[in-house]
Image (cartoon, rainbow, N blue to C red; front, top):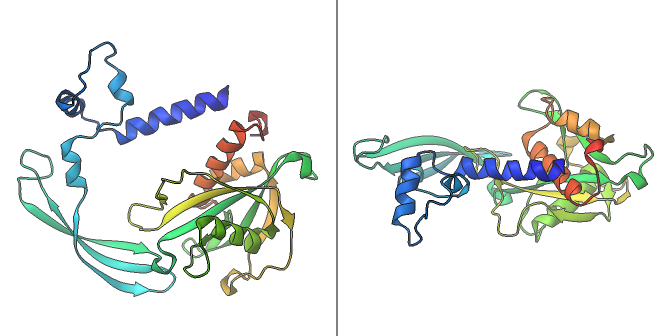
Length: 269
């Protein structure tokens, strides 16, 4: 099946991305382990997630951090110290410090949810499977963007990230009583939004649900609208340049889940 083949290829690519690219380094680590390579399959190490000792230079020690601006997001001036290893490309054994701009949402415990609202073909007027999408203002590009319902975790208001998904589904997509599916494992700390941001994404899928009009949106969401599109239309939108990255990731994970569980077919894409 095309979906299964795609998933296998994606897993292989992910493993190779996270494994050290230096083959000699991989061999050094493998030779020092308790289990020795018999040499039966020389290419097996390409698919193993093996980490060499030099990876520690990519984890620094935060020696100073100060919040320099805070409104919707907080901007931190962070100073990080790295201990370079002799012989590494990183340097000559000296300790080095760098200052970074780091952003995040501390009021939300640096966590936010994004949910893909799915409607099975049996429930839609078009007779095709659909998603509910949201159109809103994007301050970065000063233009309209397309997103899936999203929002931050709030202490005292939410107990779990699923609570956030349910609330945003209600407020932004005007949907309630939907089935909520978490799209990452319980041991996953959340997907980093970007390398310079502390926020982590928790993606969800909702299935079905009832339409409602009693939800109140935030003041800055005054021009937010929602609409339904077919899965095929959403797939085209995802990589058109108007959809925000967390919504693209959530949408792709949702589509993969729906394909695996037979709720859509490749013809729907």
